[in-house]
Image (cartoon, rainbow, N blue to C red; front, side, top):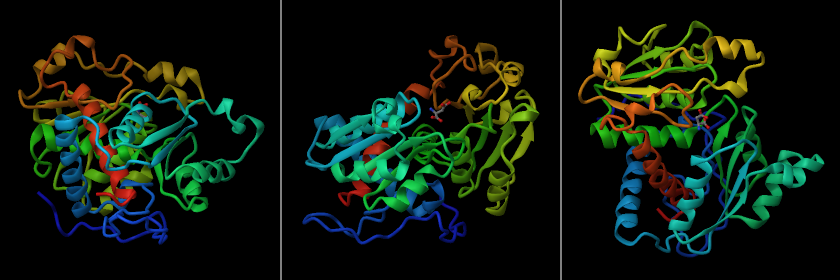
Length: 337
Ligand code: ASP
């Protein structure tokens, strides 16, 4: 399944190996122990196999016992400067399923951020109380900035239009669970590829595999040049399209995204592209019987609700997989996996 020759060199965004205190019982050999998770580029194919193996174990344990004490006594700081439903709640659930607890800051306007506190100061405050921090922030590079100031692991839970690494990991886990493998698949990313951070991370992750990728978007919402340059360098050659019809019949995984209204400077520009694609029963009739339909959610109008009953619609299962992957990541960075 794994294309061995694709292994990115370490870059400045790679995890900081910071030799933290090692509480008794922590497994110092855990590959991400004490590290930040800032970008999918930190994950080699071997790391992905390892992470998904741990996620599988988490799934089994949750099915068998629901909650268990692997991270008993550990506290997650969930610091969200932008709205979130799935990421915030699945991180909170993940730490609690592992016997730990969470400090949730959803509305930074009720914290000292509203008094003008800087991100570095807020992060240093949170780490005084927590063992690991999940950060969502509107600015690209904010998680990396936070990680420079924190001595505890920082997990990027979405940095503006930059990356959303834990989402891409759960997206890839979903593909493995639904399709059984990754290599050899034709994967189509549809919608707002310019502002959608989930597809920026997913495209980078897919470039580690032997897959065919189609990118379908309005011309104004194409994948950014820097992401394209990175994936091309990794040996992936995505093709760009305005319409879905030509690529749909050969697609094994259709990954639909929302047009990211909040990223548009000019509302008229959003209005002109907001309904570019709608996946409905008619669309699904042209797709493979074995296709997997994914969406990171929230959905606005890009997948009709009539499609939800189609067994190929995997987006609600995808949300569930997210908890197992985030449980795995928390256990890994805290040295218990
Ligand atoms: N929930 C995802 C994100 O935070 C996708 C979206 O908002 O459209 O990026």
